[in-house]
Image (cartoon, rainbow, N blue to C red; front, side, top):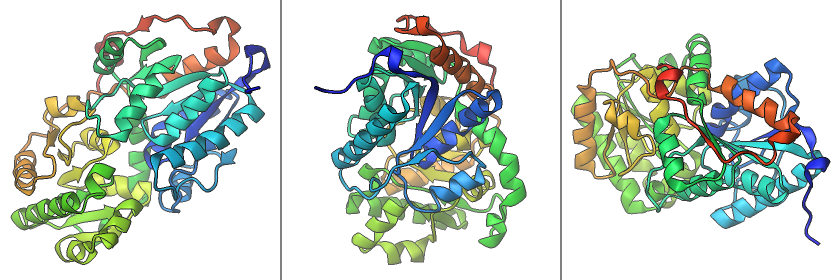
Length: 396
C-alpha cells in the first residue's frame, strides 16, 4: 500500500527546500526570519547545484545555518526526468522521516517541482514563493514547473498584482497572497556585505561602469551550438561597439557546452571568460557594471534593483514589469538585435523604481508559515484570493 500521512501524524515545523543558486538567494531572507522568530524548521538541499562555487561557498557567504539534509547523486543527471525523480525519491524519504506540516519551495527549478510533488503526495501543505510568474514560453522547462507547482500549492506567495492576475487566470486552488519579492529583501541584505567583502572588480582589473557582464545557462540557449555561437557573436559586437570588456562568468553547464561545441577558444578571444563566481563577487560585479546581458530570471530582478540596464537573451520573460519600466530589453539571440538592444539600454535613464515590493516579503511569508504549522483549522486552506493592491507594498 502506498504511504501517505494524515494531518495528525504531522509535526509543528516547516521544511525549506532549496538546491540552486537562485533558490538559495531567494529563500535566504525567509530562513533568517524563521531563525529570528525561532520558528521550528529545517533546510533540505536537493543537490541540484553541486559545484563548490555555486553551493557550499554560497551558503558560507550568506552565513546561513547548517543544512539539515543535503541529497547526493542528483546534480550530475543530464535528463530532467532522471534528475527530478532522484530528488523526488530522496526528498520523500526525508519528509516521511521529519513529517513537517508545511514544505516551502521557491522559484521554478526541478528542485522546487520535486519538493512540491513529494509534499503534495504525502498530504503536507505546500507554499510556493515567487508564485504566478509566467513567460508563456512552453519550450522552457521552468515554465512547466511553475504551472505545476502553482496548481498543487496551498499557499501562493506572489510578487505583485501581475503575478496574482496570472494565478487568478489559471484558476488555482490555493490561497494567493501578494507579499513582494524576497529578492528585494536579499539584495538589500547582501549588497552592503558584497561591497565590503568582495574585491572582484579590482581582481579582474576593471573600472566601475566600464565593463559589461554576461551570463547564459538556460538549455534552450546553451544546448544548441548554433544558438550559443550567436550569443557569443552578439556579446563580441557589444564589446567592440562599447570598447568595454564583456565579463563572462560561465555556469558549469555552459562551460561543458563551450568545450563540447569547440567554442571555448573563441569565447576566450572575444570575451573575458572566467569561472562561475561566488554570490557576493557576482553581486558586486553586477552592481558596478554598465550593462548586463543574461538569460537568467533572477538576474533580471537583481539588475533592476541595482539600477543596471539589462538585455535579456530570450524572446520572452516572466519579469515583464522590468521591460515596462525601461530597465530591461528582450533581445533573443540574434547578434544584430543583441547589439541594438545594448545600445538602447546603455542610453536608458536609470531612474526607474523597482516593481517588486518593499523588502519585507520574508516577514509576510513567515507570518503565514507560523499559522500554517500551528493551526489545525488552517487545513484544508480556504480557496480565496488575498490580493492587496501593489501600492500597499510600497516600492523599492
